[in-house]
Amino acid sequence: MPISPPDGTPLAGVVFINALDTLSIASTLSSDAVWIVYQQQVWKSWFSSQPYPPSELKKNQLAMIFNNGPKWGPNVYVEVIARVLDSGGNMHLVRASNQWIGRTD
Image (cartoon, rainbow, N blue to C red):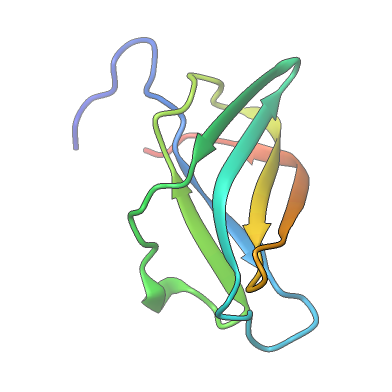
């Protein structure tokens, strides 16, 4: 495993969107963008085209990968906002507050 530089590595992660009222998430839903808010700073990015391993997903989950973010944290809380698109092309924003940014070792 490569050693991290002294000032850390760029923020990367996975955003999971869970359907709470159904056993599976609609296959017509997709998500293309994420905003991460830390204190008074906002970072926006497009999700990676790299797929999340389907074998690790639940039927009621959508997962998108982001990377090359700012060097915030580790050990901070952020707000995550994802743009979700439905089959009609309608845009919906989904927000999760108090999301922990940890570190991977």
